[in-house]
Image (tube, rainbow, N blue to C red):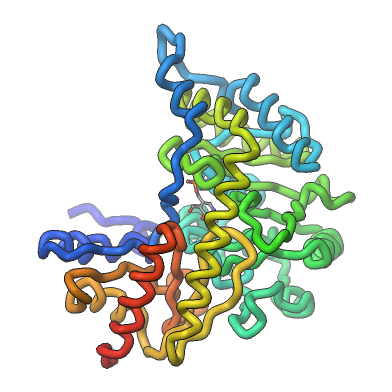
Length: 396
Ligand SMILES: Cc1ncc(COP(=O)(O)O)c(C=O)c1O
């Protein structure tokens, strides 16, 4: 049989999806499974977005321009202006989800064997995108004891080599929920300018900030125009994960010119989904106000309930809708599988994401899980109670 590529063999499985067969088996056995494992919000998509695809006037479902339809990009630029991020529509390339924006960014600024420094734990698919691009992830460890704050700048500087091309951050963070402060962004700005690196910021959770905290974008930082690349997406903002629309934003013309060539190779982002995403920009502020209240309440309940379980340590997320919980166990891969295969409380169990896949340093995060608080408060309480009882029963 012909041989699979080395790249294919080393491509990591998603830690979020690899337990799916065990969940399916649990459903077959009649168990109810609370999904704390995946960032698929249960919040309704704004009606304006759904209506726009219901009553469109297209005769042909044609390609759009590779960089996305002009009308949509002009409106995205308006959206950024409202968020005090001042870009033009031609600083934006519409992509097939934030996922494709990440691939384009990696392809645009890094060659095979180049290095990208990423504070870990980080969004697990950064490992996959790096492998796909032949790029090496160099992790800089952020710690649960510090609530996953930006590691000291000296830690970054120790890791910079001639092969380092970029620093990638996720703000607010998946899986940590950490929201970088303006001061932390300024520190990163100084370091990328000093070492002539790109700063890629995955800001797909920009709106999801709690306790009155506000998000500070890398494109709000003056002097970072040539260095900054934003990754964005409609998936979480409007609960439109299935639309598959995101964008890459940079004021660096060479970055946009190069990313556009990657965009041309795949022809066009999805046309109907751009129509929905353009309409979604009309979503009233009240939608977000309600959503933030809901997530903040969920966060409060989740953290309070987790803190009541003996031996569990958890940070206090200020943004996004995830947290990392450290459990009194040795191996969360085995624990997560056991929860689905062998445990239930009155016919109910939970699915969590083992955290090791959110680290690239081997052996780190083995006793941690990521929890997505994408369930309503009642379900969250039930799910944490199941976790509590499971921890009492589990032997590893
Ligand atoms: C931090 C982060 N970046 C990017 C993505 C990619 O999302 P999408 O491709 O749906 O836009 C996700 C999805 O969960 C994410 O959590």
